[in-house]
Image (cartoon, rainbow, N blue to C red; front, side, top):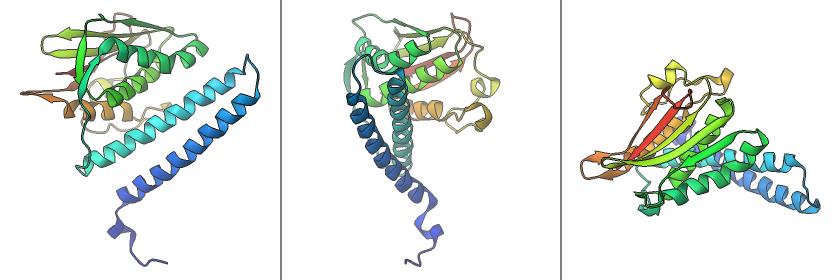
Length: 228
């Protein structure tokens, strides 16, 4: 047994190693779920879709934690390329549609086909999926996902018809992890991760950022991601 004290190893390193272990177990669980699902004939129980969505959601959260860990160690680089924004929104819809339909939530998208964006597609799509998922948890019946060109930025926007963000999330500096509201399941990780990734998108003297407010055209919360 090693006599190396935990303080010399670093708690963040232990945490990152644990996250890797959990991801490996989650991958095995997803494979087992796929095998079980193949046993059932169509129509399959809706619980399979719920389980599939939740395991993917857990995997995304773990991925975000690992990326934040690598960013903190300056061991992470973006993979930037040009992408169709409409295609990106379609990917988000494809990943979220099952749970939204099970929850009877309408997801509306608005975007011109000729809008393009230079970004890390995988990370931005992951961030949008996380925030759309959060929106569907707190909305009443509708979520609007849109994107537009605004001056030198492509602006992704997620709006809902819920009760809006609590003051702690509209007044927060998203560069810092907010105090978690564990009783209501609000960790703020999704916003913190998205702000961190946005800040890594730089073009000239412009840098990505996010805003949160309760000025949704649907009456609830509004999240906006600005990428130069």
